[in-house]
Image (cartoon, rainbow, N blue to C red; front, side, top):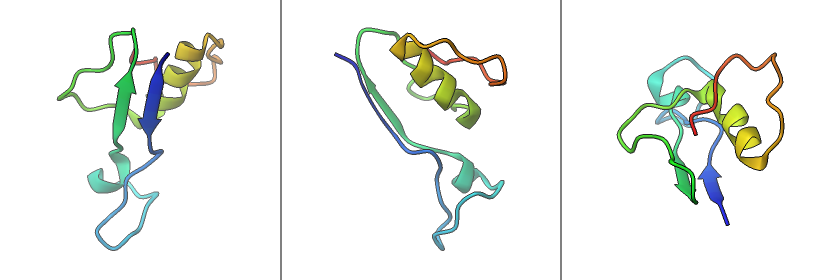
Length: 71
């Protein structure tokens, strides 16, 4: 089994999201499975989240997705 627990974005202290601030761009991700997950202390690209999940599911990543999977 593989389990990916994540959020699609962070939020500011005032509860806002969707901005360009670090607190709004960062997201948490926990991965449990056989693949080598991302570096524990590394910074993940939010654009790589969807391609990464598709890749682990064995689904082709569309060329329109700009970021490479981080798995």
